[in-house]
Length: 114
Image (tube, rainbow, N blue to C red; front, side, top):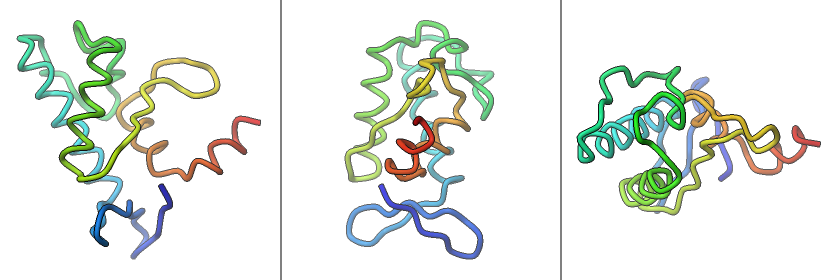
């Protein structure tokens, strides 16, 4: 997903010319994660930018990751891949790190990994 900068903010292009800032994307992701936790009667009260969903959210697992991708994709009107783990090390990422990776072009991510 290519990024554009506008007034110093990273803009994520969406369907039909709509855009979303990285901050808005992070907010949407946190809402989706909280929604999943709440529907499964699991705690989401400590959810913040530093939360590592795969480690800090009770019961959040690979199926929850797929659910989060589907829900966020539906909200944004475009297919979204959510990198819950670092593509190089495989370590779980925080909400902040996830959204930073989501707005980084894949070609830049690949170059960083090499």
